[in-house]
Image (cartoon, rainbow, N blue to C red; front, side, top):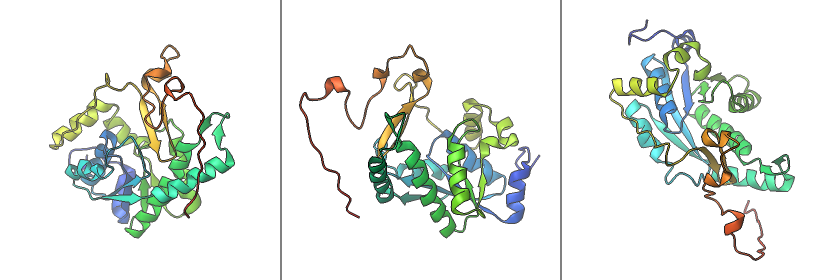
Length: 246
């Protein structure tokens, strides 16, 4: 056990011994707070970063700074709206879609985020990028592949593949208890108000998980946010022009 009564993680111990500064990609959510506080209590030097990619589902991206502050960490908001807009034009030009119907807005957002935050982390003296992707999704591959290609010398830490952290935090209740133990409150959004997850940026918005995993659930439970359902759209054609200012 370490000084804080927590099981020692060999990975985190090595970062401490090397004097590494870990830059954590955060959203201000439960996972972000848990990981940031857990690393800091393990003696790891931590700095937090979040990307402003014009996400329409967030009222103010700067709220992330306030959400992370109780964990005793500094959070930097990196403005990447110009970069994600350029990515949107590239996607339209390439007609980048999954199976001809699902625009690659989320995938492009991951690349823009990884590239922008990596640059910001390097300027801030970080030597490790930490992401909160689980060990069973494609985001872990995206983040790590992009970082490895852009700077092979930069290390990547995936807390949800660290056996010690997985043992400590097998679920949300353990994370909440951990934060409460250290005097940090975290409000859980009522599942009744939204029964799916949303991932958005200036290019587009995707919804998945929870109730949407069932074929019995109608897609109309989703709030389109960036548009309307076809049945609610005006019954007339409209022409638009996309123009890059770059």
